[in-house]
Length: 365
Image 1 (spheres, rainbow, N blue to C red):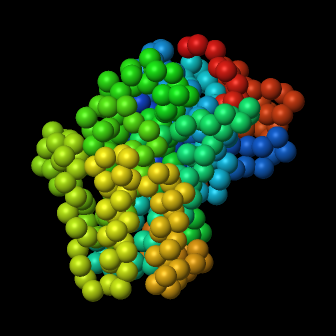
Image 2: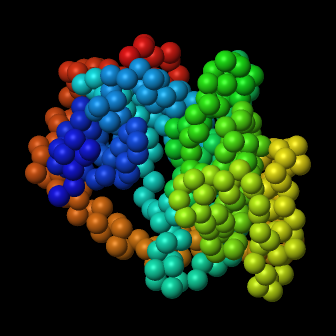
């Protein structure tokens, strides 16, 4: 039986949501698949990121979740998971997000390895091109007054790249994303630099040293994704976190394995620039990185459409995953669904629920 971090079994009610599957769990929050009802009685699936109970009274962790929601709310792009709502239910903060039915990139590559299924390079280039579009949008994002937000994701690992069974590619989990010093303020940026967050295997050398970072750190992290997808293996292979951190700090990048593929020289040149140890030597922004990827795709006629990629995913992975999700969703029959319209629309939120727009300045916890 699935349970949350407190040991409570799923499915369970959480305000207007019925949570019935556990998508992931981290040090600060859990992500559930849930169902909620619209004001007219229709239902929709959502991903609910809920702060762990023992952290709910911690102002610092609460601020991190609030900052994540506020930072992501303006990001409206086909290649970024959409944030719909920020709220507090029974004292626990949560974020209501778009549900993407599919796999993350880590799961996809692991499944291919387990099944001895070759991962065609055209799909790798498709994923990289789509993901770079989403990252470029986040880097260009501005507030309502047109001031750049200066977003730095800082955790561009395979688990934060989602692929859906419709062939969509979406970036997610801006939980440790922050603005640059100019947008955030020097004191707050220095405070952030003192705490290493993110996965060591995908850090730029300056982030691994605990230095201040800007968007060129994301260019480096994305370059590691390029290297790994085209090489078919992990870049850093430290035996433990300390060794991996040292590898990231050194940024000693081996050349891309040669297998006689026609685009390898151009891909190596792209990797060399994206993974340059000095930020000044990297692509100056993610738009330039995307254009370099696009030049390889067009120059070598690497063809892949979203429809073809979706067909590959559905043929090889969808049946098992969708069947499991449907089985768990049917368990909701054990719980009486809320009366259509109750706690919705003009009736206001249910008891114990505080709902706020992520754009609004939330009250302190």
